[in-house]
Length: 480
Image: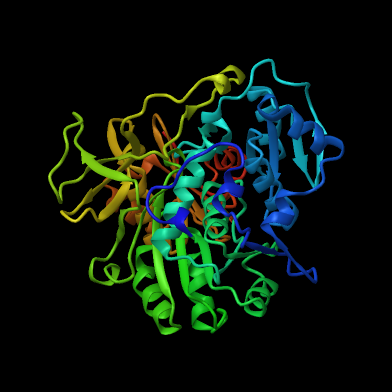
């Protein structure tokens, strides 16, 4: 498609329709006996609340509680195409829906295929720069509402499609809900390429998921980084579709120990592996690795996609030379309009953001390939000691051989281990961890929990974890 090549032309209303003039995309609900064209989805019924919402246009604000089913995905596409402002929320997150109603003044909630009116028309229209709102927890776990224009999310998806080489004979899968920026990008990139999208609502941990994508001939699979162990297992056991062309990872860092095997196993089945780097605030994809260079340059997330510039700066904001570590910044037409902290913010035009500070630290070489080393804001002071939370997680995972998360207070580091085993304060691993971190053992509190709370993107929900560890402590190192 011409719109996938070069810089996309950006519009607001009729965005998807204008990008896919022949409506070549198809959407398949594997449990049904037919496929829907993009035209079918965009020209759905106008009766009832659909009529009212489409009529209100920018004076509406719809909370779209979106999962991975055809009904939920089609609602997102239809609202986006009709230029109706929406806030995308995970279908399982009722608490967040209520927060959006209170914070941003939503007029409707769309869930389970139907609208529920919450308020009348908004007094002021939502600005075209803030048509799509995506909640993000960031590294702290505290919700922020990222405002994006339809143009930015569509332009970013077009660049992703071009970078990956998506074609109209590709078949993607809704492994993630479009309520997450990675899931939304996955759906839109395939749609803009005229590809087919399988709307599969089964868990990727279930046999039915793998049977379905094999039967339907999936070619593109997008996974959260936390799913890497499961993907390795699926590759080893020949569970992948024979039609597979590419596997993508985003939503955090893939476990470094798994990367070589992922590349070997993916190449063995004749597919390519792409590690993506992104951030909701960046619209959301920033860079994508090339399978040709990654095996020679382990750990790189690749170069910026079309339209994206990246740089690394020091603490004073001066640009670093190639190879030197610092804070990663991004400039592109896709970055957010700003955060929306109250209902009135939605009427404001985009903030002036020349370079977006991602909050990540890393380096890039002379060709623009980037390596991410962690969050710049993961450094904490605990009782005078400088703590790197990433180092805490990695060292704890190595010592205890399980997934780990870390929380800090003024005088304590709480290490949360994903295990059903009991770990007493006198076990030698606790002393080993303290030595590895160069911390006094009394500053470390160990909590074991059968399963770390995670969102659908695979990231640990730190707010839920903090709440749970207050009442789910099994064994701890003695506190001060």
